[in-house]
Length: 162
Image (cartoon, rainbow, N blue to C red):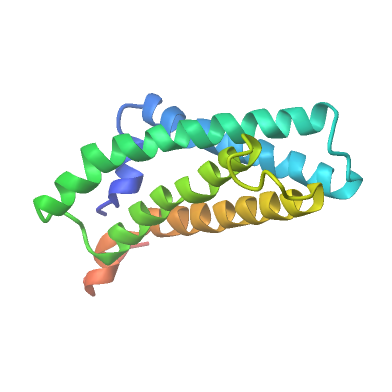
């Protein structure tokens, strides 16, 4: 079975690529999601939960921006220039993984008061939750397509003998 470039990235150089490209961003994003729920339920915009939420939002967005830049330069451009994509499934997996930069960096900009500076706490909370939701959607699309055999998109899927 062939792999998408997304899955290959996570599989090579074990355990480092898995830690750098999956564990760190996902742990930060999931921490934001979990603390976001606590903030939504309690409506407490101060305290330790909000501090953890804000720290993880800022670090996660900046970290993933560097991941995005690195992978775009070292992977997306060469794959595109050399025509080495493994079909549309491969493109979707990598694209949706990299699209995670938009909501994650959006959280960073929101928590650094670059955007929404004059918004009420309710408006900021709403936008924060929207960014978290968008990230969860794009990350799961990337994971689902990333785990597929890219040859399935070419009409030449592999059959398992059981």
